Length: 588
Ligand code: FHN
Image (tube, rainbow, N blue to C red; front, side, top):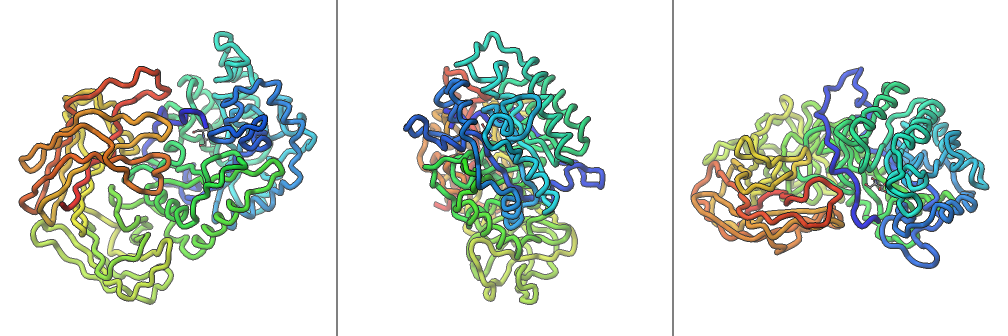
């Protein structure tokens, strides 16, 4: 892996566009689940270079070891994947329930995995295999009804003298981006968009040095050749048709806009023979559900080996997801996100018109309670047993008037990893805005549900619901939350960071609520366990105790009184200010 993960903080996303027959995102929103394939010359070293295990993600080996182009290109002479079987790979995607496939046409190593006239450094001309796997995949995708898409590294290219980031072979001062785009990127995009039939999307990646003008020109170029082809958010500069969080990142709460979570089955993208950190299938299913609940597709990766074989543990997991989807797919495909902007401790929600799907990640208590749903529930039943109605009671909390829904789950059979209950509503779901205390008395205030103050603050919130540019003590976050059961609480501030990047801590935080003040330096007091903790750890700082005397609306303000300057080392990303996930109140 690069020391830092240079993905995507610089991209933003547009707001969702309304669905219509002419909406190019329609098929993609309907699909919700896709197969990512990282395959290139890096599958040969598979994470080992000259006998030494290279840390990090496999496809970055050339960069990590600063392998000279002349040496790295020798790999092509050994690339002969006898076991590559496009029909089997597309079949696997279908078995997994994946509706589109994104294959690396050219990754940062610069090697074209198809027959490119624009560069002899390609899988047909430079290998003893002399074969175009993208042509096979295109044919099989058509035959088996999977949407074909291409990954293309438009900025980083370590083979081309003018491509970004190979400065061990090519002097940075002599690089001419325009020449790289003219001689490689545009000709190759033209090939990809004219030779393989309709392409669902081009998955651009890692927009680190590309200018807005170049990104806009690439977008126009794609749309001219295939107007319905989508452009991923990692084209940069907010020019994508949808956004992509950083690798393996799931945002807290419900972000704004259309998103695609891209994720690995182990840690690497390209095949690495020593990476056996396979994620359990149950967790992957929960992440798929969680993505859908956040208006996000889930693009799950395989890295075939140098023989073209899909690692066994990858195939097993994909098939397990497929089995779950065959039964429960109605609660995922083509669904809209949760009507709530916050996460629940018991699972996630998706919506389809007047149906609200509750995805339980663990067995619910017999008397399950959901707070904040304003719409009348006509019936509730397990998705897999619609005849087994679950008794429903709806009422108002006497102290606050908050709508409370109770399900009697005595007869509900919970099956791990996710059991879906469908609520049929009298109308499309409407909910109480803002955070609401849970029945276990915890109250989570996500940054995405806060208001930024004052109105002309420099502080902002990203569409993913994390703080941006918190550099001025004069700015603050403010929540109006509903408390049903008052009392004493332990208050925590939750921060995060990308695991390879520094955590921004040590600032002095102050909380004002219920007439009390809590002040504490942001320290790492505990790490909160959750599915993506390996990639985006969530760290809790204990601020102290708060007494809330009465039920009703609680206004809580988070200030940073003292903000430390960012580290001296020049960051790749724009903003190194504290990333605040939110504030949590736990019953004391
Ligand atoms: O640098 C790449 C990486 O190799 C991989 O392709 C991932 C997939 O999202 N994208 C970049 C890092 O974010």
